[in-house]
Image (cartoon, rainbow, N blue to C red; front, side, top):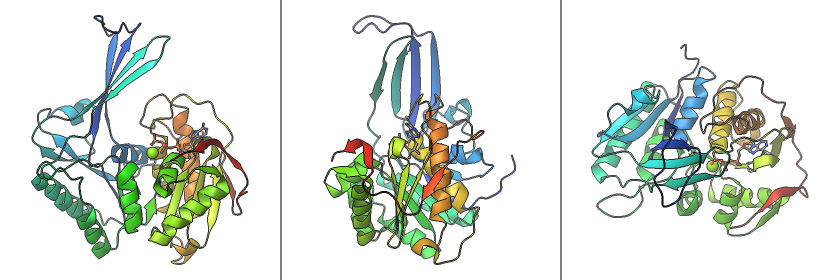
Length: 336
Ligand SMILES: Nc1ncnc2c1ncn2[C@@H]1O[C@H](COP(=O)(O)OP(=O)(O)OP(=O)(O)O)[C@@H](O)[C@H]1O
Ligand SMILES: [Mg+2]
């Protein structure tokens, strides 16, 4: 594959092996036999790197992975990743899909990382950014605990590295970690969905205006650009100077898992291909082009069955409103 651009690096601190059992009918408490078992190496940064490859963009993907299963990258078509092998096994997320019935999921919590392993992840990230002349670092997914302290990983050393190297950080996480790092204002971009944003500002969001006001709060904490993904309502991007709404026509939804990761890939594929002047949208990158592409990639993802985006052919049209309708009601109220 030819790579057009290698200035994007992703980091997935807590990857997972998605194992899907296809059964005719699940008998709880009984012995069940799977007709087929599928495996996918998943994790939000991995999904972003994988999706960018569809646009011939090689984005190195850093992942700490348990060394007990050394064949996992090859087996899951993930040789393009940059692993840091750590002692132990990879966590597993189990899905049971019944033929004409519901889907049952059992997710394992992120495996704690030893402090020495996290330090090595930091060093590998810095090395990879330098080797690839990285301009963007995507940190995505759950934040594991550190074995020795029981505290979640500290991103501060990573922000020191990116600041030193002039690299912009896109941070996508949820819950307490989202609020903690939003308050620190260290990331250039954060991509909460509506519920995550509501949780972050601790109030219900009912309209696009509510979303814009919540995002502006994060701008006030230092987050230059908030990309709020709103499911069927598309995306609102908010900087100190602009609020822009991008959306697509409704599409037939098959599986929404991973839609947010596809929007990040779509956003970066556009902004890294559209040079813009240093004051564009008050942040120095083309936010409007970025979210137009993001909603197209998001809409493509939800029409596909796997959590990783499989194709960016036949993208639907995106509409961009430079003056969003603040009174537009969200498809679903977002509660904290
Ligand atoms: N029903 C839908 N119709 C059209 N586009 C959709 C629909 N649902 C999601 N999308 C697209 O996907 C994008 C991301 O979806 P969403 O806001 O649900 O992300 P998310 O909750 O972060 O997903 P995840 O964390 O599972 O990757 C939306 O901004 C939109 O562009
Ligand atoms: Mg998400």
